[in-house]
Image (cartoon, rainbow, N blue to C red; front, side):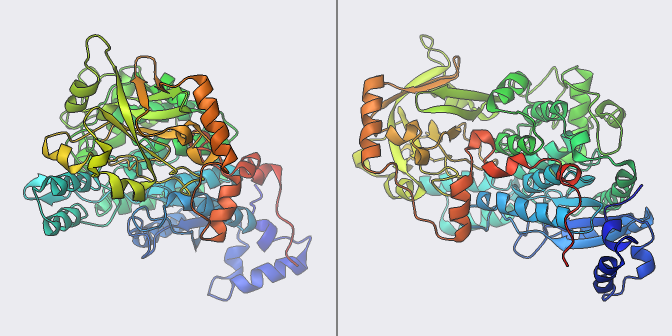
Length: 593
């Protein structure tokens, strides 16, 4: 077979350009015989850096990837990817997902690369890499950096993010002081790797395996374990085999694979950010996926993994209990995985790849017939405040259910007085304002936090109650927003409301003291206003210039705001989704001289 890289390094039909390309790549010590040997050039898309502590361990793991590539007969070219660190980037790392995607598309298409290892980890890194691989469609395999080791504080598991949300409540209630708050936060980050809870990072890395894009069993290995280095070596070897087999992302990430991933997400108690990212990846493959699919395919699936924030345990426990293979084994055994014949990067089907998998600890990964919760997937809600939003049902606590969902005359539904905040700054400034008269019968609403309004979409919807209510034992209130929340949060918020307020979605028209009804039986959220009143408010707001949001601060903010789609459409760049399978449909790029 002719490799893409040969058009650069071994093209007798154009000796002048071949000489130009090959001359400069010799200057760091690689030989002409290597570049013209017919060996595939394998890229390592390096996301590890000092700016990205969750992914930083990839700097070391890449050494084992290189050895695996060389042993299998490939040549390795390692290159940097735009950094995305969830806890470091302001105003939000979500702003950079599409930027990293664009950069990686240009790299994979415009350089002499035959296949690529995608070093995934922190939340937005995984979708950015998979989106780019889907667009270019050369052989690609993902390699997770792995979660941190379990964190501990005063003899109790301290999970990334989850421990901070709990400590935030304890600080507000006066149970701990500022110094102990910082101690809790530090205890939850004990080693290299990403969040050790089932936040967005663990979720997206597990879903990359469920999609077939990682080696089976590789998603949940903790970053410091020796097995992480071993799977890195195996990943390097596998991508070389994939190039010779011409096994591409479009062969692996099919509609069937996405449905498998939705089912796995329910079983593991995965993050509410997952729909945004999987919808985006699907769009770049030309596949239709929407929030309703998440409800139809995944809501009836039980919660099997007892892992924070929906449960008790952490990443090390999940891996030792069997990890993703253990969950897949339970789903396959129960006949709950819809497409066992979907392909994986190994060339095997899911059923073949996980044939020998089993659960090693039934406390952490429950048997299918003995789950933590039945019907633990997402609900796709709609109404006159938005066309669609997501609610994670696996994190509905007994306290929340008893307070809001157990009225025998109106089960699974509640009404409340809306308290509306315009962004997180407004929330923090006014949540404890007694003039708002916030009690447990209110619904907290935050807007201006979506892809356009924030910009990028902020993780701010998991709003805690006022301190006075926390001191009375009210630790969770109903929350609605056009932003996101951390996957490490246990709040059963109504999230990702689309369209957002910034583009005149219904939340832009909501006012404090309006009555909002949430009905989980009907999957609806509505404000109790007439259509005439809603129309009058819309006309008045448009006359004032529409919903106000902050000015652009950087060129990229303006560029993205001008072309970004809503959360329910994957927050993709609208012009980008028409570019699909470009290695096959657009050929080799033109010469540069």
